[in-house]
Amino acid sequence: MKKTQQMLIAILLSALSVLASAETAVIVAAGNGNGSMDSATISKIFLGKSKSFPDGSQAIAVDQADGNPAREAFNDKVLGKSGSQLKSYWSRLIFTGKGTPPKQYANDAAVKAAVAADPNTIGYIDAAAVDGSVKVVGKF
Amino acid sequence: MKKISALSLLTVAISAAAPAAQAGDLNINGFLSVGASMLDKNDAEIAGADNQGGFKQDTILGLQVSKQVNDSTSLTGQLVSRGSDNYSTEAAWAFVTYSANDELDLRMGRLRIPAFYYSDFLEVGYTYNSIRPAEEVYRIPFSSIDGVDLAQRFSSGDIDGTVQVYYGRYQGDFESNGTVYEADFRNVTGISVSANMGNFGSRLSYNQGELNLGSPAPTGTGLAVAQGSANGLAFLYGDSSAAEDFNISGQTSSFIEAALTYDDGTYSVLAEWTAFDHETSVLLDDQAWMVSAAMRMGEFTPHVRYSTQKDEFDSGVEGDIQKQFGLEADESSITLGLRYDYDSSTALKFEVQNHDEKTIGGADGDSVTLYSAAVDLVF
Image (cartoon, rainbow over all chains, first blue to last red; front, side, top):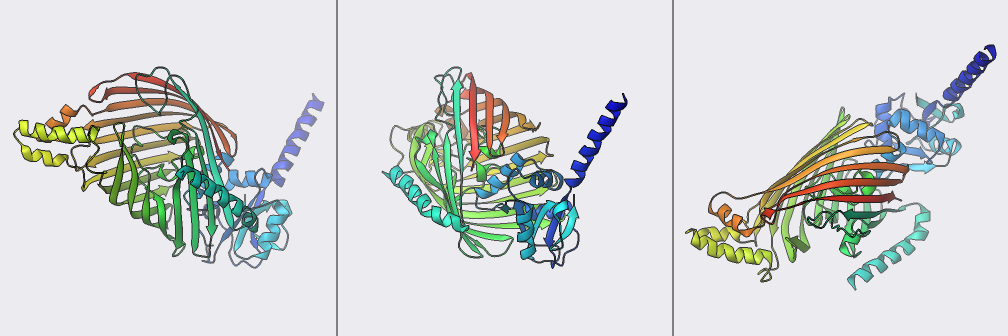
């Protein structure tokens, strides 16, 4: 009985730690003047509905590759769409010449490097991967 | 010959594009739908299917190449090959876009008429749940024009949307009651307005065009016979001036559409209503509408749709003459379907559709059941 309890607690703790480490940080370059943003503002930029930051400067979304855990978490928590729904959304725009989805980068490190190098970009990475080269504008 | 040259052009375009694609500024996208369908009996017509089954009618391949030429200008070309059209390849879109600013686009070239909710992505089956749009409602026999359009996006608070106006001309085939005419529709113009707020969306469009069929219409065909008999009938009804209302050339036809959508991620609903108003009495005015609902459960999306179309007679002598033609239809369908998202770019679809032709060609029709399956991909 006690053993079962201990095991359950261990499972719970490990599940919690996975959840905690899976927190997604939305990032901009360290020199970007914008403060924190809500998910609606971030969604508009990532869905191509808005092409500028709240301060009016140009905003270019930077995405992660299909299947990355950070991408799945971001799609789910910030955009509120499944992979298929997003693909449908972009297909409707691509095949009418009305939009192009954000450029995809291979992983957290590649997104961080791209965002740090260009003050007009916005991306997202696992919160644990954040360092001084970028600024967090939202955590989800 | 035309078909071959279009295909070889595409091949050249793609092979030429390949090295540039690596440079990162040339985009190549495509879509493919492969379908199979079978009717239980041949007593009514739907989706070009028959009771022997077939793989051709719902099969569509599309390839798109686009290039950002500079900050404000881009080029887009989309070639579509349809099984229902014996795989002849057509440029569904070929246009240059000039973006005046982030909200205003001017496009010129071969464009899709934004008459319907699904118009823009009509052939990209992946983007919707059903295997094909409702045939009763999606009944404009041509979908692209050569012309210009202007799209203004707007966003205010929670609402965002687009206003689009267009103008152009359609020169190509026009099918009416089984006969293909050479058409030259001039001054094809219209406006569409769409707006989204949260889970809700709405859309309105008004479209009109001036009809010019290869005139005189070939003798012995439906429209020529109708025109000819209208002359005689008008005389019999003692109203010879009514015959003039059966002329086609230079007459304007208009089409209006209204749609409402709801999508909360799990449940989605689309309702769309449309109406045709023809100045010429040779073509019957009509109304058609559909309602569809779907429920997303992980990879599975079951859906249901009701769609209907009904012709209407003009009033007075013109209507009495129209009734003699035996052209009118009154039909509806109930469709049950299941979409399965195999992965993030492939969907498998299964559908059963009961199509009921209450009236067809002015006489009592029959009811048939259509079974279909399809695979839709985007790449």
